[in-house]
Length: 331
Image (cartoon, rainbow, N blue to C red; front, side, top):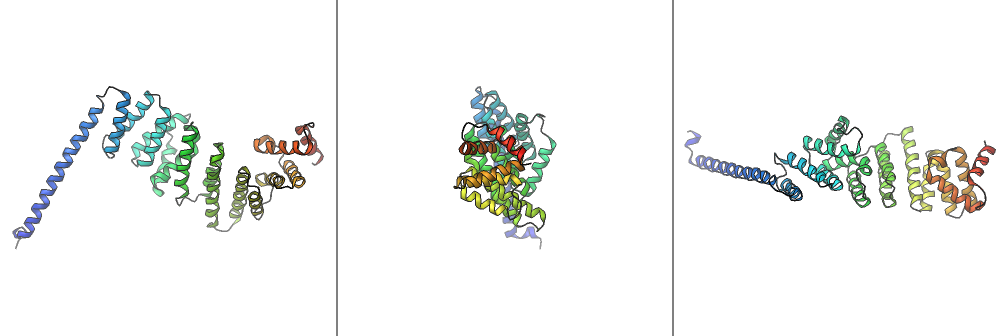
């Protein structure tokens, strides 16, 4: 007996066929409504009203064939309205959401044209973005891509702080474990010059320490520990946590000598803050002998030296002349 002679099958087939027709009709109506909505936006007179209409469109129809064009129009309208900071925020927020390669290229092109000398999007940026997204979620990949450039594309401190924390949390909560890049992210945070973000710098370093723990034992692993603990000690000092600074320096010395990362200077500076003024001063001078240009290369070390010099030798002597003579006599 043919299956089409089966009444139960015929009923089931008929219901399925009707359902397909209904869904097709609904999609057709929805598609027509979507096209009409998109076309209608172009007839709006006010640039601000058009901008909001396009923004509403990409929210209502996130997978529309017109999304690419709508996003491009939004960016152009922001620039027309001279809202550079708003377009930057828009681009970053869209990069969190959009996985379409063409849309991401459009967004990156606009963002990097503002901050890179070459203007046109370098191929390596797209390649790096693609590599990250093969391993990590879109928000994590975006955070890894953009974190190094935040300070260049965001001028308002409050917005910089907002995205720094958002990006950091995405990365820190992921399984990203590249020790060198985590160390660089920590350094990037310091370059922002915001004391309120010091905790982020340290959190990147702590994640790097945890990642290093899983590495194979070798000389690189030992060196990594020494450097990471020394960098954490500097951050603790910047946060005025003197005892913790000394503890971290002690931890660093298990892996590397204190001539690394200006370790002796940091040790001396922390000692002076905990009442060991003479010992601390001696270690600072010893560190400055080991690193002849330290105070010229680091404003932070310059400040440590000058402050201690004034405290110990008063205001009459010249700190630069004293240090030059001290170095000559201790060659």
